[in-house]
View 1: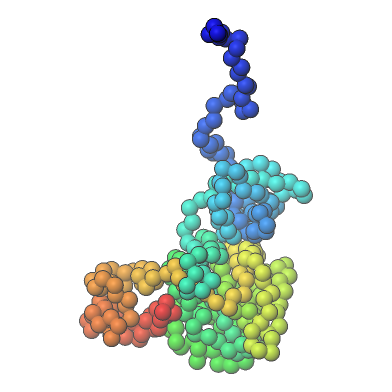
View 2: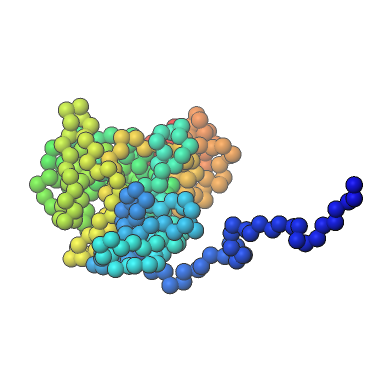
Length: 332
């Protein structure tokens, strides 16, 4: 048998399924993207306030493909392109998420390694707790303080329902922390609280039933937030189901208040004692002299903690250290 000769006519070339244009990883810079603040998140859609200006129409946006699964939460500063008119049935794209200045995070419990970011870029964390009905809980307040210090937020303690009891009994436990403590009553407008919130982005957190949504309704009359009724067992119904940023009236100084879902637990698996003490300039440098592994709880657990030396030298009031260590116990 003779060997067959092949030429180019015997070669079959299959056309490629993809186009001939080469792929590139270069992404557009979107230099003209408009700045905005995320105010709500709902099933893959984000409501944004262009320029964080509540007087402009809110814009509904989707996440651009190049962002992949980048998490975007209430309070995030983002870049928008597309239709920014805010008209019905229009949608923009989020093409950029700016670096976060602060973060309010929690885990489901202390053994859960997965963090949940609740709010980004808030300046203050207002911890709302009732004087009575339901009874105040130091454990929850301490955990919220830890989350605030670790996340870079300034904590504010707001005691509600002062008409039902003496707020000073509970507030005295936190005076040594130089913590702003505000008191509100159900029969009075929260004028002092409104002054503290003016011109800032502040997140409100608290157990269900403590009057958080009632405060929001008083601060933002158009909020129309549902007000829960405390149940017979002392735990309220969850009336806020998702974080929502609401604009404060301009006549009260403007700003934003973020109403967060009522929570019954505040996991701190992501926080260490050093994260908390880093929020205090005078203590952050001192703990550098602590031995490795020091939890800063003092004797007998940490007999060589440098914070005790500050007390001995008269540089740290004993009451302040005692209050701080009580907060750190929340990490145990």
